[in-house]
Structures are given as C-alpha cells and as structure tokens.
Length: 273
Length: 344
Image (cartoon, rainbow over all chains, first blue to last red; front, side, top):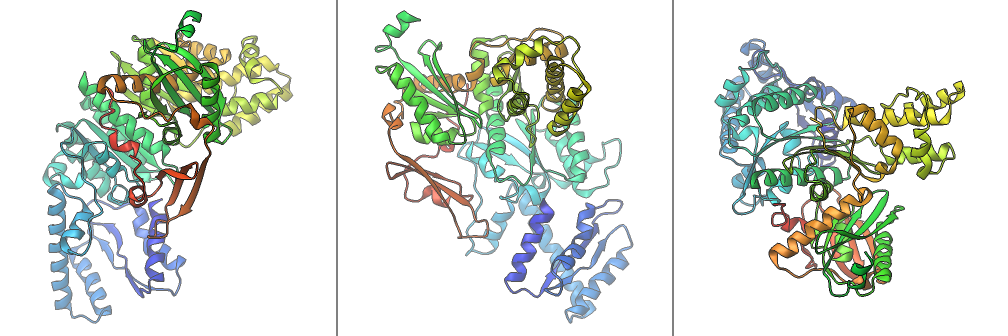
C-alpha cells in the first residue's frame, strides 16, 4: 500500500509541472543492513508508470559497498546538475548536517510536520498534541512512511492524542539505545527499519509505557516477520499490552477506530485496578 | 416483570443502542441494571430508519417510560448518538466487556460472533487484558451461516437444531467461506446428510474462529458466548467440543452490546450527575436525511457526511483535518469527551 501512495505522490508532482524527480535507489544505508527491496525498485516502477513525463535522478545508495563508490554516484548526480565534484561534496555535507538536525529534533519528542513549521514560519503545523496532562503513554512502532502519513495510518496518532495519550515513536528514542537493544537479538536483523523497530520494542519494555501499538501495512514483507518477533518478545519480557494494527486500503475507519478506542479503554481500565 | 412494568412511570431507565452491520438492537435497562426490554431489528442497510423504528416500538410499548441516559455502540454508534442524542458513545469491545462482567463477574473469556464481525475478549479479575477482532475477512460470521442456510432452504432459526441431529459430522475446510461452500457442495453430492454437513460446517467455523481471532489468546473458563450466532445450538456444541468444557450463553446474548452501552450510560450519568442528551421518542417521527459531498480543499478528497434532522444540520463528520467538523455546527464530537467516559 505505501508503494501505491508513492505512485500518487509522483503523479501529483508531475501534474504540478515538475520535470526532474530525485529518487535515490536505496539498497543499503548501513553496512551489513538492507532496505526493503521495494525501495530498490521504486525508480524503475516510476519510470515505467510515467514514461517520458519526468527525469528520475536515481543514484544508487549502497553502503555495503565501499564509500568511494557511493561518492562517485553522488558526483554523477552533481555532474548531471552542472556542479563540480567539490560543490557536490559540499552539498552532501550540508544535507547530512540537515538530516542530523532533523533527527535530533525528532529525538526531542517532536513530530516531522512540526519541523516544517519551525523552519518556515508561514507553514501552519498540522500536528495535534495530546490533551493537557496526558495520562497514558503509548509506544508506537511502525515504518515512518506509515505512522507519519495521516491517510495511511487513518490518523492514528491524532486519534490517540485526542484520547489523552502521549505517543512515543522510534525516532524519539536515542539511536544508541536502539542499537544497544537491537544487538541483544539472537540473530542479526538485516533490514534497517526492522532492526530499529525491534530495538525500540525492546527499549519500550524497559520504559514506563502503558501499551505498545504496532501499525503495519497489509502485505508488508519485512513487517510480517518483525511484527511477529516483536509480539512474542514483548509478551515474554513484559506485561505491557500490545495491539497490532493492520492497515489496508479500506477507507472505512470503523475497524481502526474501534481497535484504538478499545485499546485505550483497556489500558485505563487496567490502570484503575 | 409485570409489577415492574406497572411502575415504569416512576422508575429510571437507561437506553442502549447497538447499530451493527446486520442488526440494530435497542435495550432498556432498569436503574438496578436489569434488562427490562429488548428490541432486535435488522439494519437492512438503513441504520437511521432502523434506530427510529426501534425507538418507536419502545415508545409504543412503554409510553410513560422515563429515559435517564442513552449509550450507543456498534459500527453505527456515532450515527445512532446523533439521531437519538447519546450520552456515551462506546466501541463494541468495551461495551461487550462491560455487559459480560456485569452479569458474569467470573467470566475470563468472551467469544462474540455477530453478523459480520467476530471478536474475543480476555478478562482477568473483571478487567480486559487482551482482545482481538477479525480482520478484513468476514469468514466464520453470521452472514455466512445465513447464506448457507438460505442455500439449503433451511430457516436460520432451525439451523442449530438440525446440526445437533448429526451422527457423523463431515470435515469441511473452514479457512475461507468460498472454499467452505465448494467443500459443502462436494459433500452433499457425495451423499452426506444435511445434519452431518451442517454440524461439519459449525465445527469448521469454530476452528476458523479459534485459529484466526483466538490466535495466541489464553482462553480460560468461564467462557461466555454472545452475539447473534450464539442462538445457534450447533455452534455452541461445536465450540464446547473444541474447547472441551461448557460455554455460557448469557440470557441477553444477542443484545449484549446494547446492554453494555446502556450500563456505561447509566454509570456515566450516575457518576457525573449530568442530564441526558436524549432527544426524546419524538425523534422516531422526525425526518432525518444524510447527505455527503467530497471536499476538494486538498488532495485527500475526504467524503464529508452531513446528518440533518428536519432540515437542520445536527452532525457532520468525515474530514481528516477536522475542518468541516468545526464549521457551522455546535455539535460536540463524541470523541472529544472520550477521556471522561473512560471505564473505571
């Protein structure tokens, strides 16, 4: 489903008159780790769906290979845009710094849309905040393109905020803690996102959270394993209730709303006893 | 019962409305928490007239009844609350659990199979500790039993009795109802008797339920079996055979959601000492209309629904950004006071 949404985004960009789309071919962003194979195919899928409508700038990002090869890919992108190797390196350094700023902003307990609002005073933040004095704390798991997408996740985060819950995401945890927890798994998880989710799940079990919610897109290959592992580990290691929320292409919200409401009721009910 | 009815003019009553995909149930409970009256209607794809008819029937039977509070539940709970004036709008899980623990405080498991959904609720010490609902697939719910009974020309009410006459229940693939149907047809053409096939179907549905909805859940007695399908004796027997011990079918099994909603409304009214938002039985005569339009302010194209009563807008929902809900209408969205309605 997220791939289908991606088609929509690209279509929207093209209709808006964009002629070049930056769409890196993500294979690996850390040594000995991989990104979901669907990302690898995105540039091809888009080129096939929108032939001759836009140019896709698709450098290969594969950090399991030598960094030298990666920089060569970057230089090729720069050349295509008429930049010297030096200018490209400078742009890359700036991009990395911006990414770091963004990540530390999220670690401060913030949401991506709030970053936009902070950078540009004209943009109004569309992010809801929990009601005053939230009395529940929920650890959220799931891929960023699912949990931060209001449409895909049926706005689960705002709904939880409305119900008076504070919501934590994987991005709000310290990367060092996630990594420390992830290496405790007996077998190495080689998907970057899955590895972070597993690490975060383990971290949540050692934190004061009332419940854990895992939002997963129907048909997601990596989640089919990760969600199962998370469910078993959390159950083995803690008493924390968990909810696995499967989202699909239904526009009907009843199923999602009922589950979220019932889960929050359950957490409060348990706590009152 | 008769003496209670005679005095109903002075007593306090609470109304529970459960608008489900297949049935719409209305329940009146007494101030003591007893089921006083129930109405079971088919939704027939038109929830608004179903709620209105239900209200009219209650009013006709008890013209003097005083309703102190209204609770709504089911997938049409917001709609029902807008029409009748709901004090509590609760999801089905919490409503069913509230009703189950009210009548059977020792219950540890609630198995609920309705028209198009099925759920399991795990209770420990009267508190919900885990729950699950069926996902996209409606296999193994009442609708399929309805459909198969119709195919065999058996009234659904007799389905269970016929299944109980089985001598050698046949094995039917219950994973998917499409396969189950072709398997049933195969068995029938091989010459197996109808009772054996129906009993086999019940067993297959129970296996499907326990493997999908009940997957990984610790099912412990006392097990309550509720929802419309609990009326089917064949299903009860198949469930008991599979679990190895008896299950309890509560007396109000088919309207437990509505009972739970009424109980939660009662608790809300009593604890907070507030007045009900019930619009009165007159709403059964009011003219409701529901209209929708597609908002084109952004790329999401949300479908906005307007509910009007006698030409006046009373509720509106459907936008993802909340824009339309805020505009022009002073109707407080039920979700806003969810926190205060929490079960405790």
